Length: 348
Image (cartoon, rainbow, N blue to C red):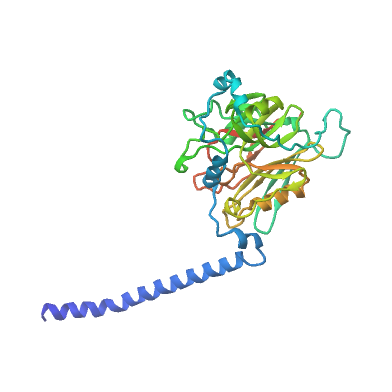
């Protein structure tokens, strides 16, 4: 038998196996395509109206941080607290800004009548396509900003539980956005200004920022101001991100589409009586797609917020309560190092 005949017989023997492989691959591809189309049709159906409207947009923590950086003074160099304190005259050169809308007089915990509301309450927040937790703190003076340590490009951030432990807090969530080039930043450089326990830890007096923070009367401020205006208002603890979700009990516009698509979310708000609301929504998971900014605002309104703002979200979203992690992190690499956290002091 010559070599050509032998080769032809081998080819004939291999043909059935090759055909089976082709059939298997074709069937697998068809099943995958059918599953994908069914899932897409379901998610964009009337049962998921917001997803149908927003799912085509591509948004994540890095994209939101870039957008926030675009309208925060990212082009201006950030300086340390020591440097900005010495440059107080810079505020005079700043364009005059409208002061942010603030919540009505926050209730004085010492003067408030006794009520059945617990000092701290943790409740489940569940919707058709999201799930999460709402931390409700009756006394707003217990809520403050913690930092990872020195801030800036030369320093690395810390995980939220490490920041919580360093302050002896009972709960905490991630707070400000941070510089994250190519998604591999070290979490040590916050976006915008940072105030912690009455001290400016990052930023400068002449810069303009979208501030989310509490003043010495425990009122939550959500809006644009300069560093000098923040000092003049007596801001004790603040971070920068956004956008503002609710102002004076009214949901703000421009919360749909773009960076408002489905994602894990962290947000903070305040009721008229001063009670603080801290929201965490999981996302990018089969059990929880996440929420849009529009939906996040609706949730804050549902729980009585008169002022509320969006904090950093995406893979940074995390909540700890009494040393327990309450979040299924959306990142395969686990929680991220961050420069700041919203913390809650233990009950007295």
